[in-house]
Image (tube, rainbow, N blue to C red; front, side):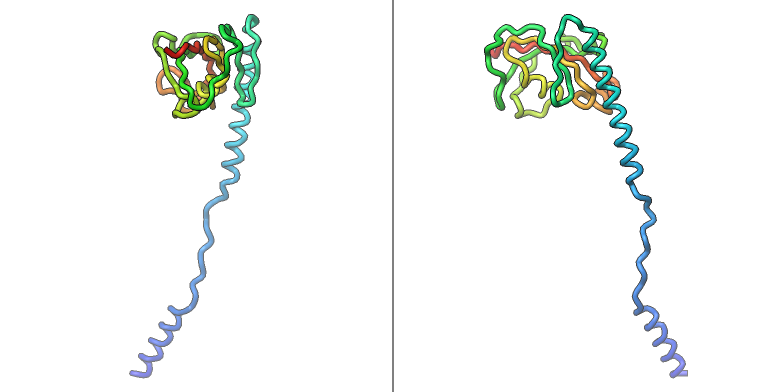
Length: 176
């Protein structure tokens, strides 16, 4: 009996000491999700670029220029065309208005008020950050921004929809 018990214990001990085989993961590869997401984003970008181009063509009085960041801008008025563009750390004052691409006011200039911003030193809406770098004191500039530089896939939770390209008019004011 003692011998049988020893054999049984030895066989159990031997069984537990063998290497266990790892399980293979059952997760599906994420490449299909990433590929689909990339395709959706490319289609959204193409759609928005088309909308920006059409909006610019409708405004015959303005001459829009395309930037490397993917937005369009046109200078409506330049009081001091020889003055320098702002540099990093420079404080700028401005007023702005946000509109749809067909020029329906979403947030008016009077609602948003005067804003101050230190160039490239504060967390700020990317559209405004990029636009203000192109403005001299006294300029009035119209910008047509794709949604990824504005409020993107979330909107503003109020009046600006998700993935909505926007038209901004910015008045750069003198520092007082």
